[in-house]
Amino acid sequence: MVKHDKHVPFLGNNARVYIIKMKATQLSEEVYWKYPNKRVVVFYRGPRPELVVRDPELVKRVLVTDFASFYPRGLNRHREIEPLLRNLFFADGDLWRLLRQRMSPAFNSGKLKAMSPLIEERAERLRSKHCQPPPKAL
Image (cartoon, rainbow, N blue to C red; front, top):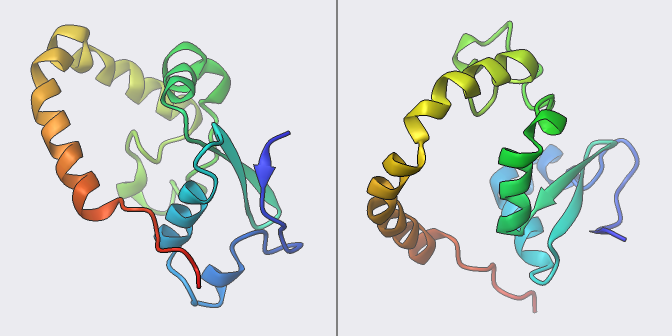
């Protein structure tokens, strides 16, 4: 059983974002930290469930081993309207697959090992400044 909060029909867990009580990034952070011992959590964006993967090994499996099953991700419904969203992070379907194939050689194991100290230093800096769990509710 995958853990999830109770959701409102048509609004999902996103109601506070829709009524501008909370930013989408704050809600995402709240969902991520709410169940620290769970590998995955379900979040409802409107009526549609989305999987929040928290376990690094599962993230690796989705992005590397099983990517063919996950590439139609449905992230960008406005790609024809907004050309700046046509990038690897927001692309979907065949465009995502093509961009991923073109970018993969830039991230081979040797290049990643060379970048590793810089990535680790930046990640630690980011974690220490911005990724603290939200305070407990009183």
